[in-house]
Length: 320
Image 1 (tube, rainbow, N blue to C red):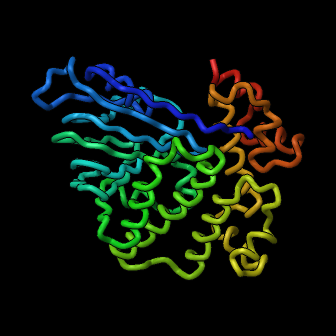
Image 2 (spheres, rainbow, N blue to C red):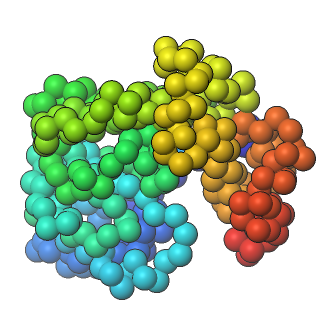
Image 3 (cartoon, rainbow, N blue to C red):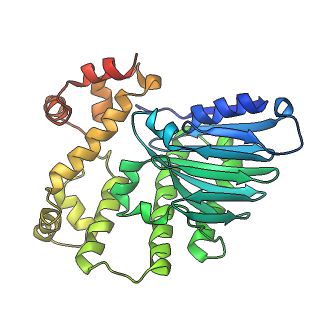
């Protein structure tokens, strides 16, 4: 297998160490202790599990304010992420896009690392955080950015189901087999997309046509089965209960063929794997096969056409 479950858990002492740990685990930001405890005596716990395409982390600490600014964003190149923050204990106030989400236990919110945001934890708290590459989530749901900074109330049925799933999963992750946890990624993503669709219905009147709804469901199916080398227009059409001709028509209106859409998603997965230092011992061929490419020569041709360099050249550039 290309990806192995990587588990990290650590105790953190002092606000400076905390700032370094969260910057390394998520993205650059500034953290400031706001409680009565001296910054040097500030304590926290951070654990994280890297699944297949997403990371699941749990973070707990005393009162703290977090600020991600335009300057932080400008210093970093590479993929942006969506951070789905579940309130496990305590409360938090999240600001993004001029919105304020006051989270209580069970609620969650979505933030984007490509835009500034502020977090305020007025007292001891614990949060679970999903980190999802933005291209991946956008391939599964058409407009995640519409929901940045909006409180997802755990009293709303589907939000509560997702929240309860995360509450159950987090304390058990170290007890589960790595392959089981990676398979659970599909469940997490499916519940998250279902939750976003439900919130969409609450936030605004449905504007999607029947064709657009078909397209969204198809993209979600593709995202869930991207690594399957048997994934084909015939399989996708059958799963969506539509004709292959209609499937091609839907993607033609998007300005891309169904085959090219799948190919680009797979290439992006390969590119991210090649840029991960933890996977430097995995061969390019293994990466291609793991991400659904059955013909290695075809993979190399497609990769060079898309990125203008070979997979090996990209790995050399990105892993130094």
